[in-house]
Image 1 (cartoon, rainbow, N blue to C red):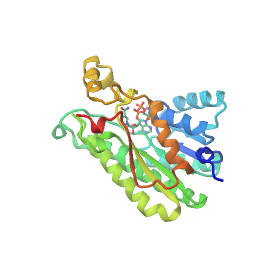
Image 2 (cartoon, protein in one colour; image 1 turned 30 degrees about the vertical axis):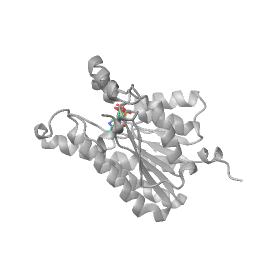
Image 3 (cartoon, rainbow, N blue to C red; image 1 turned 45 degrees about the horizontal axis):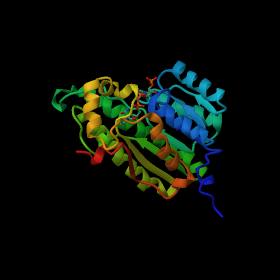
Length: 258
Ligand SMILES: NC(=O)c1ccc[n+]([C@@H]2O[C@H](COP(=O)([O-])OP(=O)(O)OC[C@H]3O[C@@H](n4cnc5c(N)ncnc54)[C@H](OP(=O)(O)O)[C@@H]3O)[C@@H](O)[C@H]2O)c1
């Protein structure tokens, strides 16, 4: 008899989580490691990554830290090569790292800013996934979880280019699922709502703005990084074996608010 509890087990699996030195990425890495995966902690800063690895190891979790600016082709290649050298396989890729360097009307943004956002938020997940694909094929399959945003579905205020990049990530995911399903690869999107991290500090550090946002949410509060983990563990594991090409929201009801 198959066991639903066992189907969440990730023992023997190797997961790369980009942008996992803090925030949502770190929470996801911890969750995957607690389910038995060996996790690759990564961000631009090796020291920050090493700190997380020490913390995880002190808690009995299996982790390695490899710095990688996902916008840099050589660093992407180095990340994948190092993971293969260290663990010998890759089963799960969480494309989590992203940037939002601008807030304001779309017509005010410089062309260079547009290029930078698309480079890090869309091109990097595309190219990193391509680099990981041969390992997935060798392992007989794999799971990609792309972290987008509710902004991919519903335009907010002043986040136009970020929103556009996340919408592109959403469609990239559907194409990955469609083209790579034949290799046993699944690809899905998680769209977080407002989550308390450094990334969103401009929204929640402003008391009045936060109250205004929270009043409109069915949850009446913003989310925490830990609340993004359950869905990723489901999508990464055999418990989500029939889930691919889809978009899942964890947003406190933001998309039905108003
Ligand atoms: N927080 C929210 O409200 C919210 C809502 C919707 C979606 N999201 C999405 O959730 C994901 C994680 O965001 P977060 O809120 O957890 O942000 P965060 O707490 O600021 O963490 C971002 C992580 O990404 C790393 N990073 C930034 N730029 C990078 C780059 N170019 N290459 C590699 N790593 C990089 C950072 O470390 P280093 O600085 O050391 O590189 C850090 O580990 C993003 O995709 C974001 O768009 C967040």
